[in-house]
Length: 178
Image (cartoon, rainbow, N blue to C red; front, side):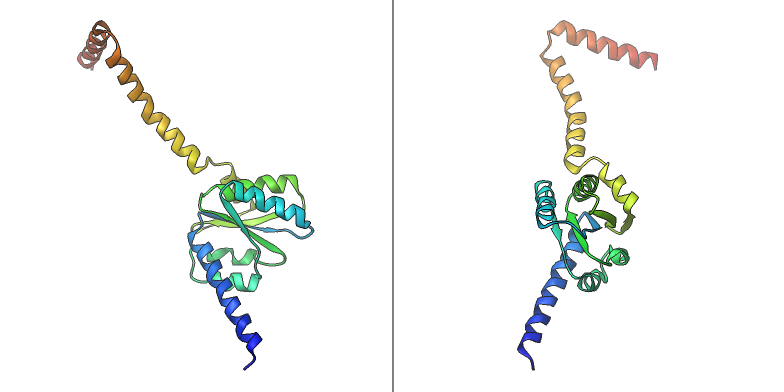
């Protein structure tokens, strides 16, 4: 038995397991070609992805296809040809947004497609996901909607009694009119 083959096999199995975890746990995965990017450009892309809470992974397509088997996003295996890079994030928008912005800045970075859960995305789908609000933006929007009525009630309660009386009479008039 050749020791180096055993180590290689163990390393490959570890890569497949890691990729399988990525494919299972990520909110969005973007597959892109990166042929022609310099090391500095790739580091720039990794840095931008890290700042947004995402990650970048380059792996052999054959191992990635093995890892995809049985995952919700198995349909993206067709994108894994040539020099591909995987950008992914837990946030269902972050990786798509960073990859789309990077593709605009660098024509050597070409988005092929990706997946959002079980939904396969083509390049246009990734662009559409990139334009959606992020999880944080949605939460801020919902909190704003919830906080506004509470602030109005708190303001009314803190108002002089005459204001409260006029608010109650307005509510009563509306109820009678309905």
